[in-house]
Image (tube, rainbow, N blue to C red; front, side, top):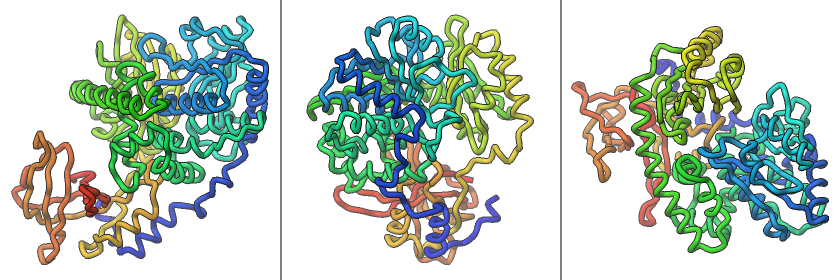
Length: 529
């Protein structure tokens, strides 16, 4: 693969990146009408009627970033009407996922609305019907063959839904629905004010950053830079940058928000988003930081054990162990995908029951692979790149064999990761002009990866360790022996030993580094070959 990579200059790179997009970026005014979402008008009318008639409304969210963001947008919207809304985010450990019978035990409402969950809640829908509770499901996950018997289901993935862009997250579905509620009630709420939280949800839920997602993230990051929402003020202070990128959100903010639901309770993250003053927001953000540190330790330990247990020759890696922390199995699965270049499923076993998470790679739909073997499962749900599942411990071995048999029938090329190296740049082209060019194609993320460049057999001048723990390193090198210009690359979470031939082949990305008001170019190693 590395031999077929082409040399690029700035103009050919510009052309290459321009070709990623079929048309110019959409404007906010070009976002398709929310009424195109099946059942959205019906749902908006029902919510508006419930508000007019003073009915009790309960919202049931989810414990990941998308679910917490969806809940926060809804809570903020209802606060501005103002109208009382009882918001529940299920606890991963005591309630399980989504609008479950357990959650409904503590619900006293006329209307239940779900955000980022509910498409597989058959039992919950039956209970709501029995109790004469109207249930509106808003979700974005792939529906199964049987749908819940709810008052309304708003999900772009329904085959009968005519919304033109399907790849939206739960928070987007909730936000679009609220735009219709606003219209029904003739409210003067500005829907753009929620774009800061919406952008965080789109990035964190790894939605493709194309079409309307690109527009919403771009605009959302601008709102984040200027919003007087206490949570946004805290995020700005924490990042301390003149511009915030999608990668800042993906690597620094999303993991913190996620850590609450993973290790303790997502209400901590919800209270951060919904804080009415910066003092409360800071307090919650500090707590999220501590939980995130604990999450890193827990995850590092489980990852080490999972790598040791994995069969590197399998088409789908399936590992299971007693008492792996249920909150980190998804991240561990992602680490296994990175390590082995294969889809991975990580299961935590407790009292004979295994619960876990799956992550995929390339063009492989992990959801379809799991669905093909659902006879061995007690539950499952998700989408192409990520899923959750549950099964009895005695069925793990059979499930591992079955899913690998299904995967063996797929095209081997579908397993190839999408993040390919973009090309080779001359050292002379690595300057601020290049940085500006790259910035013009942001936001980067799923379906619009930040370009990475190749250095082949570059000559290492020196390697220095960095950081408190000396766990990172700075590599100074020359791309060609005759080059006058040396390049400095940062390699995080790894210390490179000096090779005997003093040569290195690696890929890297170009990023902007801001420190003490100074802006510089930073080259970050993505992979050493």
